[in-house]
Image (cartoon, rainbow, N blue to C red; front, side):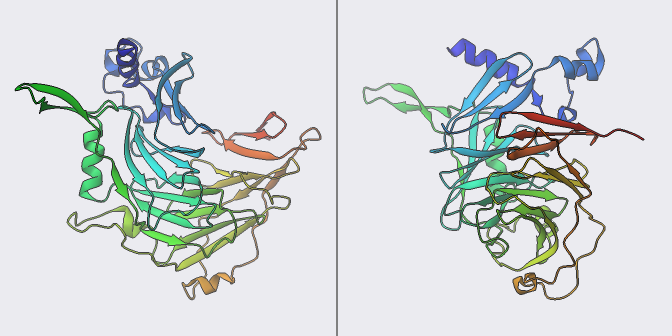
Length: 367
């Protein structure tokens, strides 16, 4: 078993994220005969899967191999997201009311985000800011939270140390009481965080089952037939860089003040666990509903926020008219709930998964 684990860990060092193969750094790819591109194609890629058992499995779908399993959550896992800044960092959201950060290379749980100011019910969705320094989360308690994941010295050191681990802690020598010594494994010191940078429950009044960053703005969805684009008063940018490392940003702002920028309405979308998706450029937004339709909108980042009060009272709600869908995608045989949609990296294809165990694909046809 130890030999198999060591072999898997050696393979894991050569993996790249399934959803973003371009993030492969190719540091040793020049040794490959075919050059960096061919080398990347020959390397295994990572797929992270999880569900009711609360176990995250890291799979190489190309070779059909289970690389390793990540254990720690105490209940179902609802969302997984890799960091755009470090392909080895994985965030998981669970019914156990916590968000965990993992180092997939070493199989180590690095941090647990939960506790006093954390979620009070199941966490349904997580997403990283493009900088990788901020993590957004949402859940059944209707709250939306922003967490600092690399701003403090303690968190950065924990991530750094985790690359030298193998999910089993460090070996230390202790006295055995007989004049000799023995080796014991000391568990890896997991970093904990219970004070988010920002928290609010004034945007949605029910389960918030999807949250995503679009630049410095945030998109969230509940069960009220709408997706809301918003930002914290003051913006996210104040947390994405820390010029003075001596200042700890943790718990810097729990103000509920928000600025709502836009709403995207969709009929027949009253059920939870229906996820939207944005393309890599943050230009298009797609979301399915309960009658088999998929609607696509222009996100419209060029539209400026309406000036005025930055408090939540302005959310009731001085927004311009709700955005109309750019297109509606449907098919006479697609009549069940569309649970999830995803754009291809080139934005020319869109896939959707449905409750009737079907997968639908739409392609953009040039005129």
